[in-house]
Length: 70
Image 1 (spheres, one colour):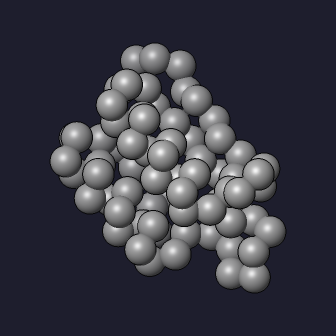
Image 2: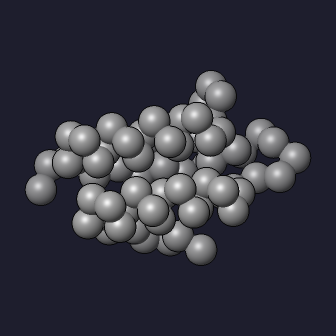
């Protein structure tokens, strides 16, 4: 397996667009990624229900593996 790509969500926009792009690129390139501090500077931090549902669906479509998806 390729080396893990880590993305810090506290940098730049750090929200849903970054998460969707990171997960899509991970699926296409078959390289694992870890996204952390998602939406850190926002009033409501962490994954929102729509983000979680989207990455769970992508994981099922590409036989991916999710950790900490709660």
